[in-house]
Amino acid sequence: AMVAGIGYAVGFADEVKGAMNDFEASTGIAEAAANGFEDAMLRIYNNNFGENMDDIAASMATVAQTSGEVDPTKIEELTQNALMLRDTFGFDIQEQMRAVNMLMDQFGLSGEEAFNLIAQGAQNGLDKNGDLLDSINEYSVQFAKVGLDADDMFAIMEKGAETGAFNLDKVGDAIKEMSIRVV
Image (tube, rainbow, N blue to C red; front, side, top):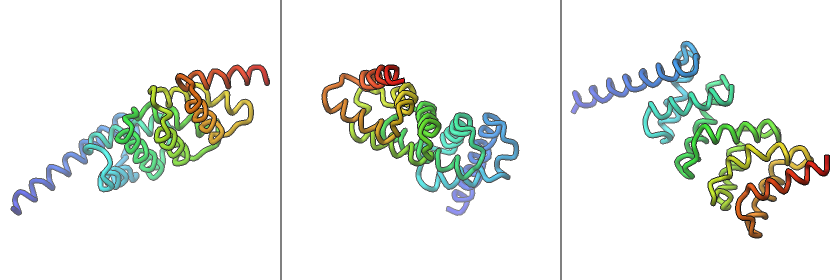
């Protein structure tokens, strides 16, 4: 049993090292382990997110590349949220990060607030046609342009979906047309 335990520990250490090497190569962050990224990866793993260390490293790399974030703590937080949405709703991590970045840029939200809104929107049926993330990316600018905030955007999309809009694109187009006329 002791030999098996030692073998597992060595194998796990090799998996972590390999995953860190992949993370460093894909992000260009030299000495990522020394800068706290390995600890962040291990915390994500210990919190039961991700399929394995390679999955976590790839997810962290995608988050780092798309967010421009370099703080390991922020990357850890964003990655955990992205993995949670991926595992719960099947959202692609890169697409999530585009939507999260759009919400942060247009409405001044934190990453956590943006992920929470996306999760609540999905829970409330806004992704029934698979267009929630695309609609956020395409129409956030239009909602912000007329002075609406992120909560307003999601409330309008939800009301549109409840009252018979075929998909969120129709609701977003209506706001876009309104914003053109208002401006």
